[in-house]
Length: 347
View 1 (cartoon, rainbow, N blue to C red):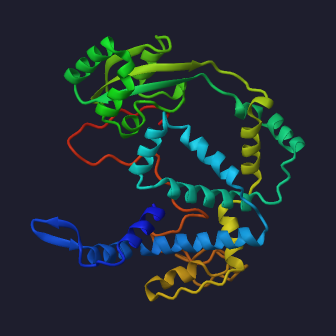
View 2 (cartoon, rainbow, N blue to C red):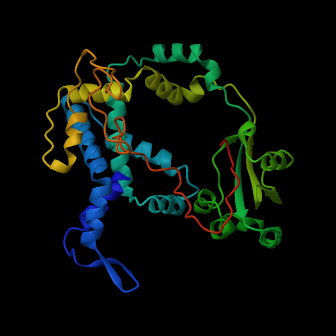
View 3 (cartoon, rainbow, N blue to C red):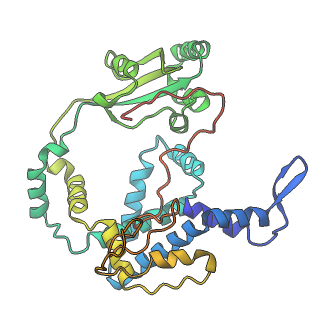
């Protein structure tokens, strides 16, 4: 979000009198828009930029290195979550991000992770011991991969069911064209691999349990909408070996043994020299003050910040703990007359 807001702010520099919208003949200028944007989100954006500067500085001073190949691999994991490159680019666009924005986002989070796990003994012996002690946590329950088209009424559902009966290979195209649900529309209907026990609604779970991979079920009604679904793959439960999932195990080991982000940020603030120049954002200076060790409590203590924690940012404006706000999994659909899509997956 903050990457997007910063980009918007830059595009608004210059040509302040040009309109960004016209309402019944009244122009809303770039200057008006920029002013409101700064008033509403300025503190959040500045806090994010300060956090980024702290992390970049600490990363360089620690002598840590982030190779392009590491970043590329992390981005590729995200890209592979989409059905194809076109769907991936569409998802980025829906979040207001370019590929360069997303790369910047990934780089920052990887730097935070490396700082938080610095000094952790991640030898194969230590990771294998962790796996042996937490083997049950890596068990993979019975799960399915499926695609879905969410529709508003039975007549439309029946029509699309007829189209699919004639040309089942058009399922993904029809999902992109007609599905009410943002996530399924953007991915051509494809949903994340989901444990069977977590499939919602129950009508979806029961229908997919009765068919083989490649088969289409529906139209079915649930929670005020109609839907058709296709079972793409079924995965039996299994207990994977260490060799099969060693990268996943190492990641879990590092997360389990890393510094908490609040702890990491407190360390970075402790040695930082931060001067807030703009008077409108002076409260951020209190938040980014070095944490004190311990202070006596005077009075009732109500509303006081925790000892050693520094000041709390204004309500609703708290900087994230060590990282910028991640883009939401899917943008919320605009409020309108369309019925809500049924809750699918493990929600």
